[in-house]
Length: 247
Image 1 (cartoon, rainbow, N blue to C red):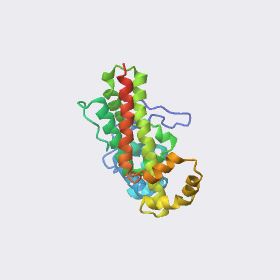
Image 2: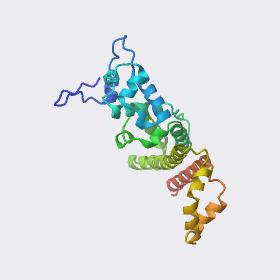
Image 3: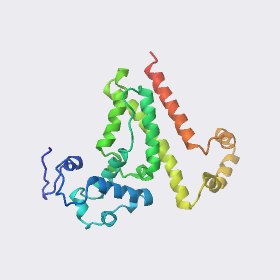
Image 4: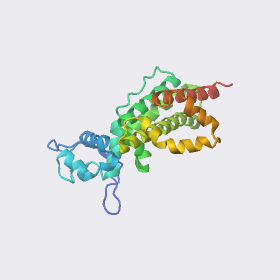
């Protein structure tokens, strides 16, 4: 077990995940990391990440305001705990899957995960970069998937990050659309396009954007984000495969 580290003020500087692996508090203690995370995730799913405060958490749990501080030092660590909790929902592919099937399945399941928990697209930088056990498990599985491709570690991570960047970029835009609709009380993307019609008409009427105009008038999948995501993902994987097996 990791030894506790103290800063100059006597604060325990041991990483969150090392602290949580210490022996549990006395049996009468009703809180647990799982219960804390479950309550916080429920609030964030319903009201967004800004609704999460330590006081609100205590109210939801029915405990004293300071009780959760036995596990997390504040909102930053609470959000890390929430992120790890929901990433535990992501069922990773088995070891028999090939590299392409594995990376594709993880990408598709990550999209499903983030659409269940829209606040994942709005994490602060500290939580966006946080290393948590369940998050690292996803990276571990992805890297294991490309082990047989004879890549050096840097190239292997570049391949994994290429798929991750595509995944999170496209999902981020999809979630932004959903949040815009919710904020405006709109029930369909057509209402979004209607609100943009004056700007769009002006830009297309200039004649400077013929390719974009063709998409606007001839595109048939504008309201199908699932198709857009999976089609783009296939092109990303095709590109990786072409590079890997070019020689």
